Length: 81
Image (cartoon, rainbow, N blue to C red; front, side):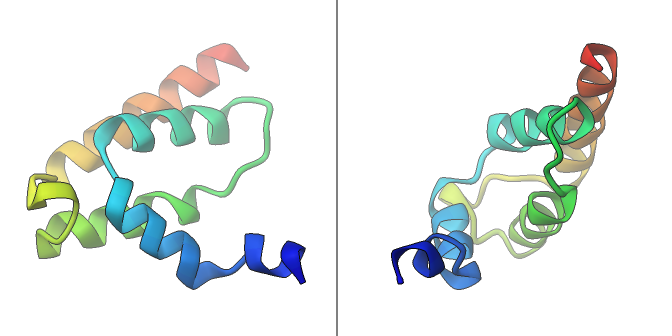
């Protein structure tokens, strides 16, 4: 039962809404593009949604900066790989 609560999508999304920032997007995109398999679909679409609706941490995320930071994180992960 505890394991199932760790993988609950609604709890993850709630945590993401409360804690999302550009550093988070960059780090997880770096992880995704390096040797550790982590789906980028878990990070980029929620960050883009928060940027478009301005409901993130302080409502200060910008969609263009999210795309830029995600791309830089992917490039950094590819360099590590």
